[in-house]
Length: 197
Image (tube, rainbow, N blue to C red; front, side):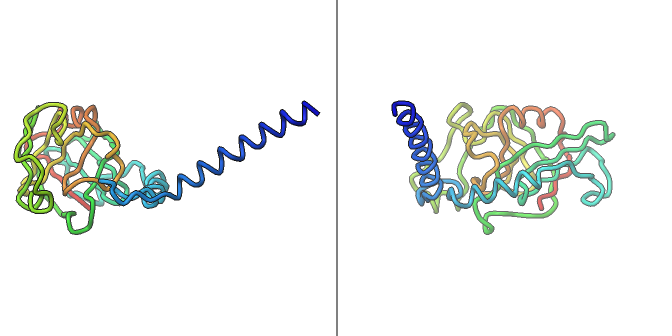
């Protein structure tokens, strides 16, 4: 009888834990600064199947000064060196919504280690309580490094908030883990081609 009770207890505890986990997966947090959890679980499955190496040829005519492809669907950044000896694939964050997403061709115009951050006028309009300036450091939304693009206000940058990577979480920029942006920063040049799709 004691043996059955112990087995029954273990079975009941396992079932209760599974029920709790299932119930938590159904909770939607409307105050989240990234996608709602329901969308994240669907996106993550899509990400895993789409996160794969790509060839540069369908996207670029050449690799002069290297090339960066930012895929907002698979939430991945691809880098190819000019001589094709280096290929990198990094998970990324992408813009929160379609209206914040810009697609097309641009290029790296400036490389900044320890960037400062200022919200754009439209960010301040949406979030009037945000600070007007944050210098380099752990509170900076641009992380440790930033590649400035020829489009005003758009960057490929790091983030100190690692929860944002792999999600729709930015106001228009492409975000990488700090260790990945540091690696890309060393590889990319001013003039590197960038395509957002």
